[in-house]
Image 1 (cartoon, rainbow, N blue to C red):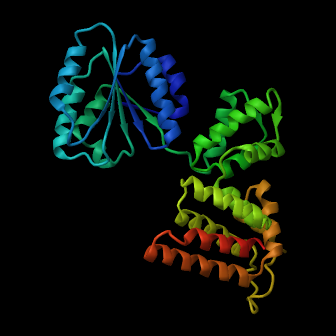
Image 2: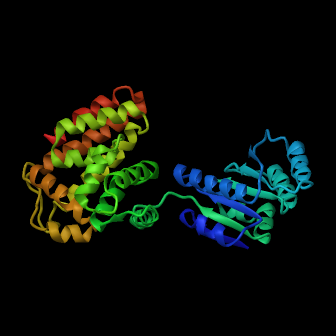
Length: 346
């Protein structure tokens, strides 16, 4: 059978029981690296003296691998094998994996890593064998935005940090899909606020002091109308090269459409696009769209500053930038994004 746990349960689980094989499923960089480190440390505690990391593909030297697996069985010390599996496991690889799994024994700590498990893979013979030998499956998928506050609470508890709910919401918003940067900020909190309740203000200060800007800080600056800060963040995002312009386009488009929904009264027809957005029903709209409390002042400020024409114009501008990227590449997209940012934040 397959025993399924989340990555943050791995240390506790290893303290309770050992397993013939371990399966890391997901592709979150932080969760994958932390889980591998924890399994490697566990292996050392069990007496493992050697470690092999093997990528399974069409170039794998199966004869040598099978020999290694059988040879290590002659020694008393345990050995660690990490097998990185491809997304597509063809018939030939399935046969080889079936033989590999059949050669596992108590002197081997076998770790399998795969980005995604599909129904097709779960029906394959080698995977069925993993089920039979009782494998521990570790979920290393990035938490969703809804799951992230709980993940932060658990990580904070592990780090002996006390963080209030509004601060947790702010962290979740700023570090969605970026657990590595979130971890760095939590470590900064450990240094700045030991044995102290961390408030929304404290969290904001830590985010500002972190060395890496996020796309969501760029969005916040737009909502607040801070055009110089917008430009600074955008320039750093461009220099770092971790975020593509098309990703920023999608994030901004989502926020602009949300502003339209928040600032519109479904019962009133818009006759003049120059009129300001409607702020009369904001409390009701915030509840309807489940907007976190610490973000409501940002949306309120933007709605009181923008009119329908500017939003419609910005959405059309976004579409034009995306079309240009598809036709000409990213060459001028950062400059176009900067121009749009200034227009929205002015």
